[in-house]
Length: 388
Image (cartoon, rainbow, N blue to C red; front, side, top):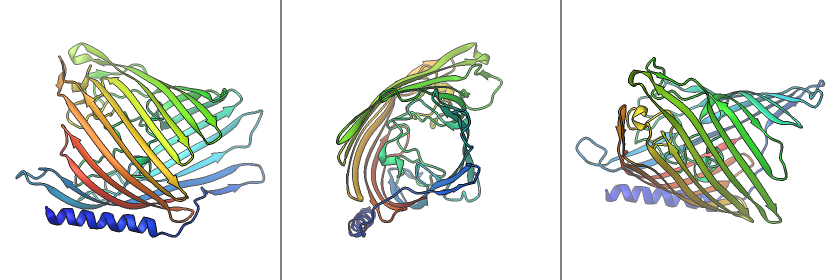
């Protein structure tokens, strides 16, 4: 154990020293763009994050001992490439097609399973009336909360020493995941900083396709944002909600998946402060709608849960230092279709970012995770992300 702690401490020191000694260079967002003579626009953007993750998982082995692992892995955002095809504006209408392909760095013994996925296939229509999106894309509920800096370019919570695919970020330790689903959404124009977004989202059928469970209508999600700008920064306030019905035919039992959230993000100079809180019913402490990391999602019927986190970051030139803490919790609950226990997840993250070049950012992250449903762990993470 002493050797493992020395290993973690040494690599942490090397990672932080590398960030501080790196040559200063401003970061300018760029993409690959092409425009035709007929005013068609083609843009390609993307990101490729890669991390070395050293983690110690308490009492994980079958004999009760800890398991230590070193893995090269994806982050909360997997590698992705996004294609935007914009048609010439006609009669005040702008139409765009958006496609995104994602690639995951897999865990141990999982080399060629689920390597690629498509998260976005969207038609976007905008004009003076606002914006309509139709296709597959990101959800609405908790979407502003998900913009935390710690997991946005990092890893956040992950499942275990052999975690595969993208990680969880603060899902289950700060917010409920909006996920990528087929949906139709409408966003109002900006009314002096106020915008409202609402949509019909393909409903989640707990535990997947089944003739024992019906979800007749789409899930309704909505969120209002109010952005207040001032000389040295801004304050973004948001509130949202969702609701969806689930009917368990085999048990003649129905319940609602529902929730509400509040949050704020303040930017002033180089300081950013974020706080977010939400409560859900029918979604457990793992923060996944219609899914469960600890058993059947039907066990979560009528379960009451909450998610919250707070985060502070400070940016000076090309260097960013941040810290965040959050929890996800559910109360024990029993219905005629299942039962769920008391669970609390807690995640503390301290992280750094250093913009080494216009496109390359160095990333460091230290975690302490505690849970009633997953082995506690401590992790030291170093990596980089290439943006284009």
